[in-house]
Every structure is written in C-alpha cells, then in structure tokens.
Image (cartoon, rainbow, N blue to C red; front, top):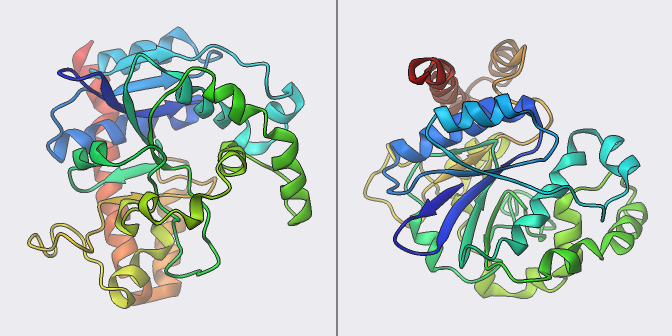
Amino acid sequence: MIRRLNQNDGLRTLLSTSSYLPGVLALNESLKQTGTRHPMVVGISSHLSPDIQAQLVRAGMLVRRMDPSTAIPAELVHGNGHWGYTFDKIQLFELTEFSKLVYVDSDMLVLSNIDELFDKPHMAGVAAGRLEHPDWTRLNGGLMVIVPQVGLASKIFATLPQALAESKASGGSAIGDQDLINAYYPGWSSSAELEICQGYNVFQCHLDAYIENHGYCLPDKDPSSTERRVKIVHFIGPRKPWMNGAVIRQIIRRFKKGKSVKWEHRVFVAYKKLLDQVRSAPLQQT
C-alpha cells in the first residue's frame, strides 16, 4: 500500500498469509522503480507474527495490523484454501483515516506509475480478462479504488449468505472477498464510468493475447503509448512466482507453448530478478 503524505489518501496492499511476504516486498520495489513518491503501507492480518511486521518495517514500509473480524465463520476462513484470510481485505473499506485508497494485490507487478488512479471514483477497477472472455464482466478485486466509509465493511460482510448462494448456484466450491464485494455492488458491470483500462490488471496468462491480439504494449516496448499500456501484471492462481518450483513450471510452460507465451515469459523473468533483489534487502537494512 502507498500512502500520500501530503494528502490523506494512499495505495495499499494486504498481507494475509506469511507465504505472500515475497510478493509484498516485490510489489513495494516495483512501485519504487516506477517513480512513486509515496511510501508503501501494508495491512497485515492479525494472526501474522511480529517478525513479519518487523521485516516489512525494515524494508521501509508502514504497517497497519488488521483487527480480526467475526463476520466470516472460522470454518470458512480455515477451510477455504488460499482464499480464507483474504476476507481481511474487506476491512480496508472502513479505514477512514484515509480519504481514498488504491488497493493493489500483493501478487501484482507494477510496470508503470499508477498515481493517476487517485483521480478515479470509488470502486473504479477492472473486469480483468474480459477481452479474452467477454462473459467475465465482474470486478476483479486485485485492483480497486476505495473511498472508505464508516460501516461499509460491515455492509459488505453482510452479503455473505448471498455470495454463498450465488457461488453454489454457479457450481463453485469456495468464495473469497471478491465474491462479497461483487454481491454488494451488483450493478458494477453496468457502470461504464467505473471500469478503467484493462491494462491496470492483466493476468499473466493473458499477457501475450493482450499484446498480440488487442493492441496492448509493455511500457518499455513503446514508451510513447499511453492508451493501451500494460501497467500491472497480475500473477493469478495459487502458485506464485516466488514459490518452490515456479521456475521449472515456467520453463516447461515456455517449452510447451513456445512463442505464444513470449511476453508472459519475459515478464516472469523480470519479476524473478525483482524477487532476487528484494530477498536480500531486509538483511541489508538490519
């Protein structure tokens, strides 16, 4: 998360499990490298250890520890795979110490400055993947502009029965924060002013299609382009680039897919280099 010091607003992320710590460190570094003027502020779940909080502070980040919520049953948190603790994200909607937040998932790589998102309205975001899957019209919770309000998180949590019913009706077996948010904002997909450029949330598996078929480009490929620029790559799925076996899986994918994953592979390699940089950063600052 990034906080503007001259105004009461900020870019934020969430660390809900210790396994995502490398992603938070890499996100922080990618934001620095793209010229942001603001320090990163990380919301961490209450169960995480003081050691993890200390690592974030040593890396130059501000930390806000999230109070535990009783709105989500414990069995849903602990038995919901990698989605469980992401429900803490909803508490960001009540962080009224900030006038506006830009939330960025910790498995995202920022390729270009995104400070302009502070000019977007509440709940601006991306129906990520829609260019490849026209029926994907829901807001993806990886990137959101949020104007916090007292009581808003409680209202979103209250949609849990509805979200569970909708997931069951569509054949789903698990839900996350994104399902509750979409249940609370059912008209989001029909609000054209809220859907921002797809380039702010491009899934890594769609990167080549967006570049080759939909006219998008990486910032360093065409620096003059401002319209269809990939500003953020989102490494979706339970297996992240910093986890064991990621390099082997990517090499196998490149071998099988060849040129069809050329841009995906290029960004993966760049992200791995970034991870290598940040792994030693806390040690250098102790």
